[in-house]
Image (tube, rainbow, N blue to C red; front, side):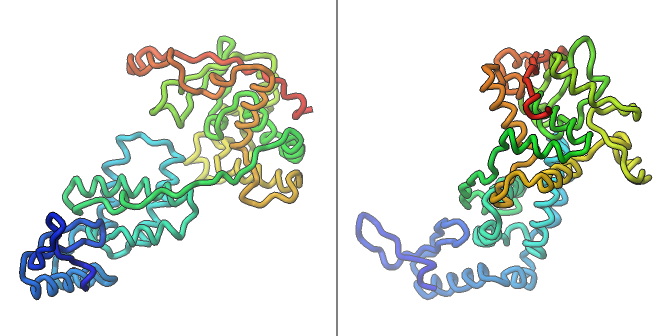
Length: 363
């Protein structure tokens, strides 16, 4: 293939007896000497290797290295655990890993090209494509460090532009959703409004976390990466009203809880408590209530706001009321860097005052 190699230019003049080969995976050039016939022959052989089915050729020639699936197993077992990633992050990675294994089934690590990865990413939504690209880049960085591939094909792809499709909740819309929600979901919505916390942190709030006039919360998403993960919310009258509504005759450890229709033995063994609400169940229940409320007619499915967008509405309402939502949200503050300087031997809690009036929504 003539396009695969070219004469070398020197000071504007061609030296026709010196040829180079351009590797299609990353554009790197390799000197092929002055023999034109040998250069063409070598280029043709290499082009065949880079074509689809190169994995079969490699198997016959016995030059295939470790399989991608095999290395991915090692990546999951050795690289991820020390990072102490959140359960939700690991769950998302598991979904991507299944996609990777299917896409690159039977391929060796060094047989996966830029084009193969680009074709996979092009078939995904921008957000998912960017997540997969970032994860693959890290995987191939580790593979290259082990000498399993000469370069990182994922790093040569380009991030997609993500357009935020989900719209924000309106006060009227969230009020309608809350009215269609069961009591436990109303409590979750109220806590999200008052504290502006994420889904995971809301579901982890405990009754024994309320002590000495504060509700103590450790944000999971930022606990390993931010200095503002330790927040104690002052139990204001507004927050106390929500906490009081969370109490019932079940006496569970978690503020947000529900008595399941059927208590399954397997769930009882895997869950922290049989009344604890799982993240996926919360998301699904919120969606059901939103659909029942019919509050956002005319909006596309991808535009529909979920429970996560309650956090954005909360911060908007705090700002509108002239209050500081920075510490409420758990955004980093200069003072909190001491937590990491002391390696958490003496955790310094960031104080927040959740005093937002949500009666316009709760009634």
